[in-house]
Image 1 (cartoon, rainbow, N blue to C red):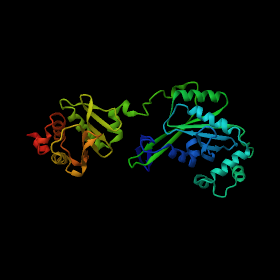
Image 2 (image 1 turned 90 degrees about the vertical axis):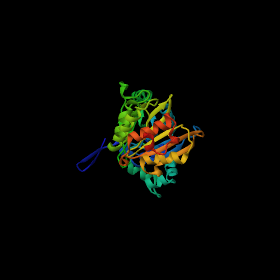
Image 3 (image 1 turned 30 degrees about the vertical axis):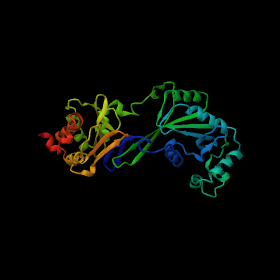
Length: 358
C-alpha cells in the first residue's frame, strides 16, 4: 500500500495491533465510529460489549441495519480462529428472540454510556432514531446478521461461513490490515470476503503474510525494519561478525533481531530499528565493569548509549550498545570487541577497543 502526498508516493509497512501495543478494544472503537468504512455498511450501533444472559460473555458490537435487522459484530485483533463462529451463533440466537421493547431497552442502556451519548446524543429517542435511520419498509429484527472481523481467516472458519451462507444465514467476513508509515502514523484497510466453495483464499496454520520474517528474514530486517543507512551499517556488521570463529550465524528468522550463537545459545543479537541497531551481547565474565563500559563507549563515542546489566534474567550478564549510522562506527573494531568479550573472554584486560588490535 502506498501513501500519496501530491506527486510523492511512499510505501507503507505492514504491522499489527499487537506490534503497536493496541488491543481488541481499540479495534472495537474504530468499528463503532466508522462502520461504513470498515464493514462496508452503515450500521446503527445500539450496544458495546452487550452482556448475554447465562453465557458469561458478551457481544462485541450490537447494531441495526437499514432493513431493521439486528447485526452481531464479533471482533478478533488477530486471526479468526477457534470457536469464533460458534460464539457468534450463540449471540445471534440469543438476540433473535428480542422484541421491540427488548431492543429499545438495549438502546436506552447504551445511551447511558459515553459511547452511546457520542453516537446518538444524550436526549435521543429510540423511536425517532430508528425511524430516521431505517428504510421506510423496515421490519425490526425480522432476521439477524453476523460480521466476523479479524486480520486473517483460518480455513475452518471460512468453511463454516460458506455453509451458513448456503443455508441463507447472512454471515460476512471482514479482513482488516494495519499499516504504518515512516512517521509511525497508522493506516487501516479492510475488505469483505465472500467465501466460495474454493477455500484456497483462507489460510491454514501460520500465514507467510502474518509472519514475513519467517519467510525471508533477511529482506524483513534490511528492507522493512530499517532505513537505507541503517541497513547498510547492519550488512557490514553481519558480514564481519560472521567471520568470527566460534560465533555461528547470522540467523534472520526472529522478528526484531538478527542472532549469532555459541553452542546453540544466542550470544550476540543485532536488534534492528529504523534509525539504529542495538548490539546486544550476553553471558560473559566481568572483572571490571567500569573498564568494560568505557571500552564499549569508545565504539559509539557516547557512554549514554551503553548499558550493562549484571543481573539480566537473575544470573546472566548483558551489554547493550546503541549504534547509529551517523556514528561512523569502525565495524572491524566492533567485531574485535565482540570476539574478545564472547570468544576469547579477554576484554577485561584490554584498556580500550583500540588496544584489542595490539
